Amino acid sequence: MIIKEVKEKLESSNHPIAKSLHQGKGFKVLVIGFKKGMVLKEHKAPLSSKLTVLEGNIVYKEETRTIELNRYDEVDIPVDILHSVEAYKDSLCILTQGE
Image (tube, rainbow, N blue to C red; front, side, top):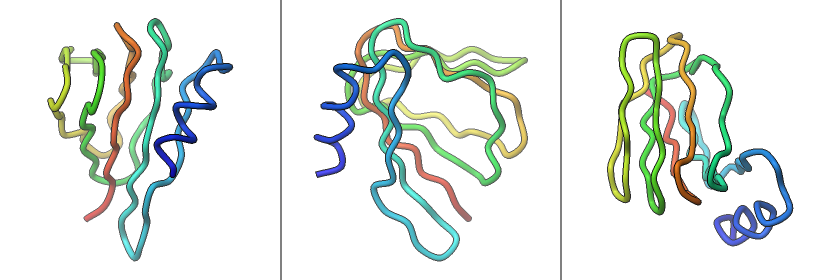
């Protein structure tokens, strides 16, 4: 019930909520929830990653590119590149990390 938990915690939060959905040797899958206007501040991914939007509308930003993502869109996130995510609408995303 991880997705339900994220959505419930998001109701009273003023920052994005992330919870592990599944992990194993060399990979992990996170659910990340946003309310409209929330920002996941600049950070670097330690592993090759892919962000997929399940609900809503977000903007993924790196130094050299900005990509608007809607429901079912995805973006590959390079290792060790500063990036941020901003929600234009209430949004729910899946982040997969690993080799």
